[in-house]
Image (cartoon, rainbow, N blue to C red):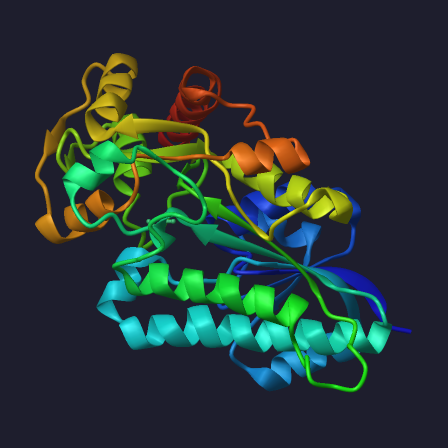
Amino acid sequence: MRKRAILITGASGEVGQALIRELAAENRLVSLDLAALPTELESQSTHVQGDLLDTHLLTRLVSEYEIDVIYHLAALLSTRAEITPEMAHEVNVEGTLGLLRLAAEQSQWRAQPIQFIFPSSIAVYGMPDRESKNLYARVREFEWNQPRTMYGCNKLYCEMLGSYYSRHYRQLAAQKPVTLDFRCVRFPGLLSAFTLPAGGTSDYGPEMIHAAARGEPYDCFVREDARIPFMAMPDAVHALVELAHAPVEALRRQVYNVTGFSLSAAQIRDRVQAAFPAAEIRFAPDLKREAIVDSWPADIDDTAARLEWGWSPAYDVERAFNEYLLPNVRQRYQRAVAT
Ligand code: SER
């Protein structure tokens, strides 16, 4: 008998680590990543260190485990994807396609849909200029779907693939096959007190906070008034899990915006500076990365998620900084200095 399992890809990344902590009590996590898990998480999940693009590895996984939920988090983020766009396509699109196909086949085999939870991103939006960004401040799911980054294109296409595999896969077959249950959230920039992102373009937010807590100067790579939405990591993980748990009848779409609060880079600086008065934060825009941030909306409208599955972030900006980010980063680096 195969063991029932929840599969988490990209498990060693920021969201993956937080999700493993959240779901550890389920006692049936199988995680996949090119990198090892941090030591403190090793006991929480059966970790497979390997490549999502390795089809033999995926086949071996389904021969050992009956996977009924997949959280597919593995991806190259937006800045990194601009450096190696074709590789980003391979990982972000082909990796997702392979997993969707596996989920579709397994759904048929079990005669029950596998749940496929997918984090998408504000990068699927592309505002053509700053004027439009100011004018259309809170963007809904179907607006401005014209990404300017490889990562944004990859995420938008994968949303569509998810929808295809769950609704129309093998639509010409004599009998409609059982397909998967695809659900997706579009995240804003994420702020974690315990990990730092790698290769994203919203990274100036978390980097500013962590640099100040470490007592290091920070050159912010966007202008002071550059603005995008953000969310505290615990809310990001809750969004994924709550969407997975939502009754299928309540869901009228497959892709939902979720967000916490919208902040300019100067507003992040002010909060960080108030908490760490000695922080040295300068603005030294990298015009190319800044242009990516300028193409993302100032805020996103998450009304559909609120109405359909009761989404509500636990952390507004005050709580996010005062109760989650600042105390935890402070403690993290104080401990690091003490040891
Ligand atoms: N945080 C992501 C990035 O910066 C956007 O979703 O690439």
